[in-house]
Image 1 (tube, rainbow, N blue to C red):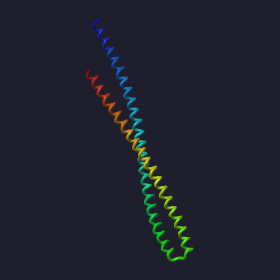
Image 2 (image 1 turned 90 degrees about the horizontal axis):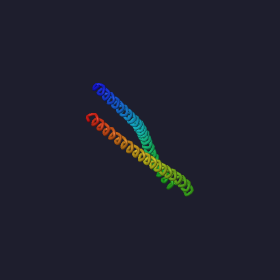
Image 3 (image 1 turned 60 degrees about the vertical axis):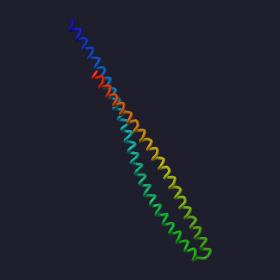
Length: 158
C-alpha cells in the first residue's frame, strides 16, 4: 500500500517534470527561432553595409574623376582666356559663351554630386540606426537568455 502511494507520487512527479521540460523545450525552440530571425536580419544589414561600402567606393572614384575633370576644365578655361586676349571682340564673345556653358556644366555637375553625397550620407545614417537597433535587440535577447538560464539553474537546484 505504502509502495503504491510512493509509486503514484513518483509517477506524478515524473509526469510534471516531463511537462515542464516540454514547455521549456518549446520556449527554447521559440527563442532559437527568434535568434535565427535576428541573425538573418543582421546578415541583411551586413549585406547592406557591404553594398553601401561598394557604392561609397564607386562614389569616391567618381568624385576623383570629377575632380580631375574640373581641373582639366579649369586648365581649358585658362587656356581659353589666354586665347581671348589674342583674339578680337567677336572671338572673345564666342569663347566667353563657351566658357559660360562649361561653367554651367561644372556647376550642375557639382550640384548633382552634392545631392548624391547627401543622399549617401542619409543612407549611411539610416543604416547606422538599423545596426544600432539590431545590436540593442540582440543584447536584450542575450539578457533574456542569461536570465532564463539563471532561473533554470535555480529551479534545477531548488
